[in-house]
View 1 (cartoon, rainbow, N blue to C red):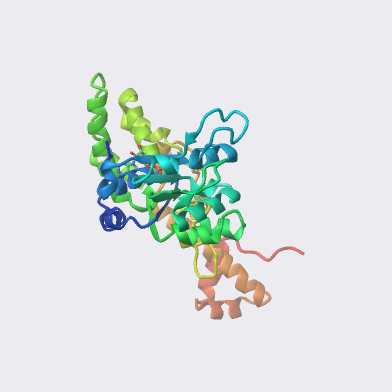
View 2 (cartoon, rainbow, N blue to C red):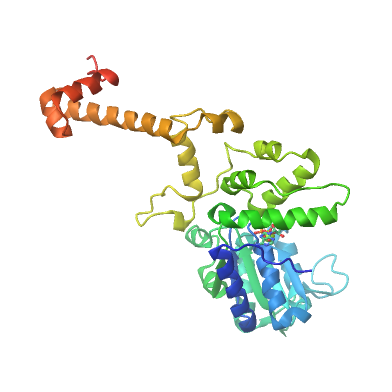
Length: 356
Ligand SMILES: Nc1ncnc2c1ncn2[C@@H]1O[C@H](COP(=O)(O)OP(=O)(O)O)[C@@H](O)[C@H]1O
Ligand SMILES: [Mg+2]
């Protein structure tokens, strides 16, 4: 059964539209996104929307198998092709003929196999291990990865030509934290689903306040983490408790994507790496190591704004005073405040020249 594509964010609606448009063409597709964002779901929806839906959907995880096994799984082998090959075995390219071959975790495919893969994609022919001829195959290749293949190309672990071949259509699924508006839809869907799957337990939708908290949570494990969180509620029966148990700090922060970076390549304050920065900045003004309840009680935008602006003011005043050799009237002029104001601020912020 194909899982419906849940969500109403711009990103999800665009993906749904793309699925419908691409499904008819069967152009090779590369699905990218962090773990748990729904790459498998998108691949299955592509298949279900296509004319190949009556044929097979064959999935292979390129990260799960060692190179030689992956090769024989993909291309199959003839009897006697290697020690232990007692009879011939068809590979996924044969099994998936006229259907879909879903290459999951393509970023982990070894280089030697990438060359073979490129050959099949370009010629539509493959050769099982030990065979001395090529066979035709007609598969729709859908690949997925959570890796940045362009970075892998630079590191020489992924073939550039294969990347361009696979990347004819790129479906990029943003992490859940960048499409917060989808969170309530997931809660609705999974609460209903688990209520019917586990009739002995009951899970009610969180109230709107709680739902807002969940929507603002960064979900490092994306939809998969959200599902597990709802399953926990089946047992704990307290959304508050479930929310508190979500890891708030020391999140495993993946690399920033290219889009998280500005033109000069420096990370901006958005996305993953920036979440780390954010935590670092906030923790200068507030103790974030406390429980979420205590933290939310302590956090006040007004208070933090005052602390942050005092801190910056102090640094700017010290910076200017140092530049002008601690000449206060000159510093006041540069800072565009009165001499008296500068004196008050120096006392308030305890700004003093360093003793040499
Ligand atoms: N848009 C979506 N609609 C419905 N279910 C989703 C969606 N995105 C993710 N899921 C669910 O979240 C879980 C993780 O999704 P999956 O496709 O396996 O992620 P990925 O392959 O990116 O790691 C699955 O159980 C899947 O059913
Ligand atoms: Mg997957």
